[in-house]
Figure 1 (cartoon, rainbow, N blue to C red):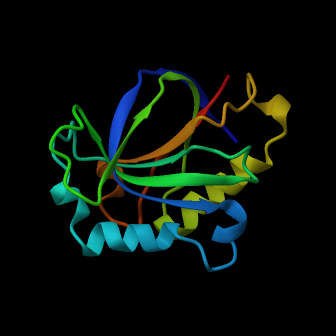
Figure 2: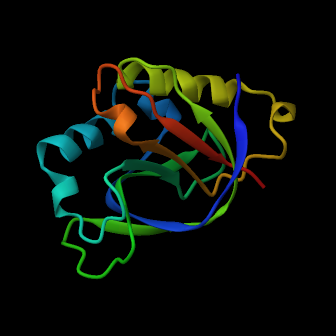
Length: 160
């Protein structure tokens, strides 16, 4: 599995958030799919002010422990200011730092993104140049994700 190491400056994401875990997501009682449906059906992106670009960002943060614990899933967009944020939306500062950048295969989002995460979570610790930080990991859905049935996304995994 190939990746590159990149330095990412800190940024702010605004959107909708929910607590979940990888175990819950595997049962069919997960929230990630419901958050995506809500984002698209309720026009959440259109209500986010101060967007810096048109990409959708999905953040995994506030980890209770590691990949096996609960975390917050925040789905929305990068913003340059959390001022004037409508009710129901949350903003979170994502710390900058060193990340391993993985790119999914092309295909249906609900298939290729979880497959990539499964491979990432199966990597032995020695495969990455440093331990996972479990502060904030995120996915970026840019113009390559315009067709949800044939998308490609970038996954950033925070390192210590």
